[in-house]
Amino acid sequence: MGRIVAGALAPHPPHLVYADNPEQNEPTAECGWETLRWGYERLRNDLEGIDYDTIVVFSPHWQTYVGTHFLGVPHFKSKSVDPIFPNLFRFNYDLTVDVPLAEAMCDHASRAGLVTKMMRNPDFRVDYGTIVSAHMTRPQWDKPIVSVSSNRSFHFYSAEVMQEQALTLGRATKAAIEASDRKVLLLASNSLSHRHFISEPAVPEDMSKEHIYNHHQYLWDMKIIEMLRKGDSRGVIDVMPEFVEQSMSEAESGSLSWLLSALDFPTYGAELHGFGTVIGTGNAVMSWKCPEEGK
Ligand SMILES: [Fe+2]
Image 1 (cartoon, protein in one colour):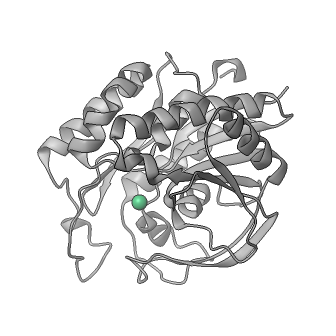
Image 2 (cartoon, protein in one colour; image 1 turned 60 degrees about the horizontal axis):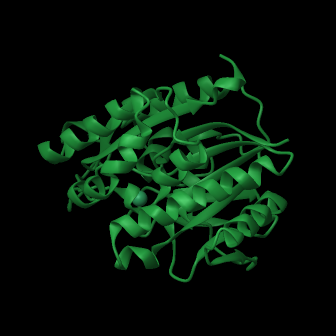
């Protein structure tokens, strides 16, 4: 029987890849955003002892408006350029997709009443949210991934309905994985508070310019992190609509709600590996190792 072995909150600022200087990325940096990059290093170390077959990423930057889409082509190879930060992120990716698991997830979501579609275009450009989260979590790129889109159509109705849809998708994800033979790592690819600077310093990695943007947003970030560390995931779901509206959170995409739902609303605390701002947005790297995987 398949199972979810762990989940992680794995935010995707392209600055983190830029500052890490992997060979796939064209621009190079001197340094930058170390607390978050060291947080990702701790996450990678934490996952080291866990065996898994596939990484499933829910990305706020793959935005679809007619249903939830799933990558459905076995191999993608191209260049991803961040539209806002082409100076920081021009990444040559070469990745494989666990298409059978993606199809199973699509099928379960469809049977749960969601509109779904498999993405079969071989020339599709994989979004940078998927790429950054997957790269920072597993830079070897030796595991197949499944990427799940954020169906934005419900957002126009209300934040509550958007999150309800994500909870349904999370339950369907869990059911699909348990009906498969896969051991799976889930990644919610989002920042917490998301109000950001509107101008970039001359040296992007100049950390004397990096700081929290807004105290109220910082308070929201700390509240959500503390709730997750205490295992109050139901409480986080309850305040999610206020959180996303008041802090402009990227969790608005449904990614964090999807993760907590797929993990069956953990009552055990999440491990916080790092917190830091990127152009003022709040980012936490956190993980939930499912208790049955042992410690
Ligand atoms: Fe983003």
